[in-house]
Image (cartoon, rainbow, N blue to C red; front, top):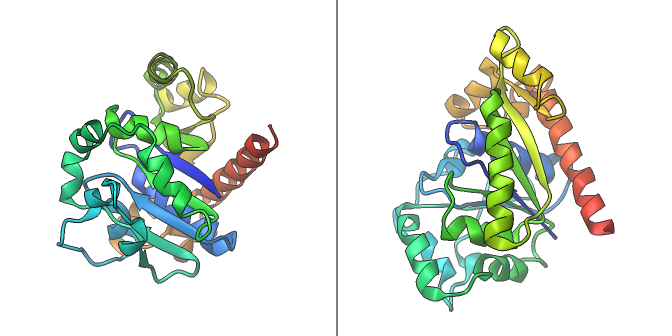
Amino acid sequence: MAVIAVYSPKGGVGKTTLAVDLAWRSAVLGGMRTLLWDLDVQGGAGFLLGQGEDLRMRAAGVFQRDGRPETLIQPTSYPNLSLLSADESMRSLPVHLARLGQKRRLAQLAWTLRRDYQRIILDCPPMQNEVSEQILMAADVLIVPLPASPLSARALDMLRRDLMRDNGRHPPILPVMSMYDGRRKAHRMAREGAMEHFPVIPMASAIEQTAFRRAPISTFAPNSDSAQALDRLWRAIEVKLRDVAAA
């Protein structure tokens, strides 16, 4: 079992779209039993997968001492892919975790699911707080989508420093240049600079359509450049996980 966290200190970089796509590829193309765990109060992962909204506000209760995540997991319309949705109760999660005083609560819950899932994909909130600290303790690899800008490389360096200062360690990080538009000179300059080795996900109408169609891109545009870029990213992540396992 491996835990893949999709996290970014910046919002609006396609984080949820990326998490949903990676979960779909792991489940459908990789044939692995996969759980997409939404930790973002906006609950976008379930929306993009076409799931109905659960109004019972129970997501944060999973983290209680007697919480059982398996009771809230829902199947999706895709083979091997299950979902643990977020809801408005997640707004109080940072305070609840701080009171609970268990720094590895998320890691413990993920461990209880190891027999049921080969991959757990975490769609993370775009902030650094008690929740992000829990994510770092649970993740085997951290995927960080960033916009095409020189400031992104600086933000990534700051993130690494903060993680080391606050935790003394962090999981391997795979930064991703997200929403890249090769027609824009600033984007090309960023790609030729400090971000030149980052995997690139292009800005494209096909990716935007995932929100309108409420489906992963390869279900309706499998041969698009965007789908191919996402496929390369998924394969790079699997290589990274094998390297981590072998270390």
